[in-house]
Amino acid sequence: MTTSSDWLAAFPIQPATEAVEALRQAWSELAARPRPNFNPKTKESALTKRLKVYIENYTARQRGLLGMWVAEDIIGDIDPETGAMIEERRTDIAYGWNDQARDMKLVFEFKRLGKQKSHRDHYLRDRGLARFVTGIYSRRQAVAAMVGVLLDPEPEVVPPIRKALSDKALATVLRLRPNATGSLFDRPSILFAGADFDTEHERDSALAPTHGHIRVSHFFLPFGYPADTKKKAGC
View: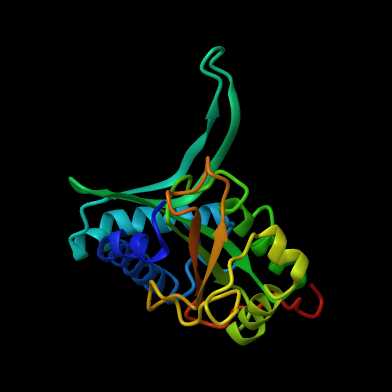
């Protein structure tokens, strides 16, 4: 089995970093000012589709990226005998890259994220981070990305997410691997300068890369103007 140090040495960090920085740049440009069809009230799927097209048409060309960008990528399992779909999921945004020796499919899972506990649970549990652990997202991939679209100020949203990871029941569900100091996350990220922290998770052998676990980097993207989930008077 590949060791932890081996997989990190073999991982194509430069193409992954280029993809991450392209996505962050595109978000910063699109979210810099209120736009009728790209703003805090826009549905998650609409945000990611527009972001993917903007990256592909503008940012990736500017940065000379050669990989493939996909939005709403269909993944799943099929019964080869009947042709029936056993399971079907759609990832938000994925970036695919390969050379003669290596390949990578970096999945970005987006969640609109306010300070409410319900938002935090949505981000961390079955419809969010757990998709990279017990679900089929990023099957046999070493790295993935969770992206929180901030609807409230970062200090009100992100520290409670990190704190929630210390809950023993949640840590068990997410199959979190502690680092050398015993922490259940690495902050700063060991992969990407733009990430707030990383988590590492055990996966079943059918889903895991050869070294047995996946590392997820967590990014939190603000709009370039005030946005919050507080209800206005009279609303």
